[in-house]
Image (tube, rainbow, N blue to C red; front, side, top):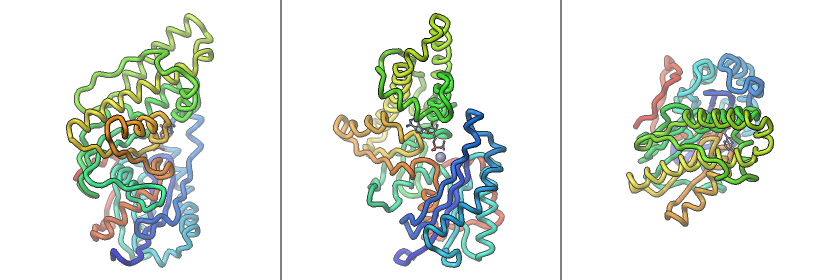
Length: 342
Ligand code: KG4
Ligand code: ZN
């Protein structure tokens, strides 16, 4: 199977993006993502609305993915889908769809862990990205996840640190909300931070032992800071937006870099692979680029479309599992809490 052309259809519906991709082995032929705009006006993802939007999007998104890849469904070798972790109502849509289609086409069904997929996105074959050698450290940072994983092979992964409360993307988005910025506020903090001074204001870094993270205290300290300052001057946010954003981003980046340095020290592994939507942040990108010279690390950041939630990363895991003939049964169920394990 390794030397032949295997076409995998992959489906991702764990949160608020409905995505379908077609891969030929590790190569992406199409990767269609329908982002749900509806959540913007609520300032965050509303699970029930996400599930309904997935139901509307899934058929057109799959059709588009097949059409763009110029592949007929009869040519497919297998169907891979995100089993979890994620929002149950959202996962159910992709899971049910994948199960029915695999039954209808009589081709194997492959279940995929979304967190494993964020990591193996580095193995998508693409001229614009390089794959890390094993072992490497993967830091997955998004709106739903914050983890440091020691990756020993495609299937052997050990979580060595994770958040005890909010994800790093949530820390960005909740801070932005306190500043009156629209959802998702992470990219806006990044944008304004470029115009400000990173040490203009000081926020405390959480004291969490080992490689775990905590971001909820930061959010509270920003809230108190804003309340105090706007009491003194109602225009405080408007007058200092760039400096506040730069200081918040600086604090978050310090937290991430401190933990990465500790992870490198503990494991002796200096290959660092980033993933998840927050990997789009210009600050973390330049910190990692500098770390190559400063600490002798080798760093990897996938193309942006493979960092945010997408089906191509599900497809590449699907391909590796296809080679192992690691297929799922028809009675498989979605799993909202699905731990990454070796
Ligand atoms: O991976 P993703 O698209 O969705 C999941 O949460 O799984 O990540 C979205 C998160 C949001 O919290 C968003 O604010 C954050 O990534 N984000 C950023 C940037 N771009 C996206 N955070 C900081 N700086 C950015 N440039
Ligand atoms: Zn994700």
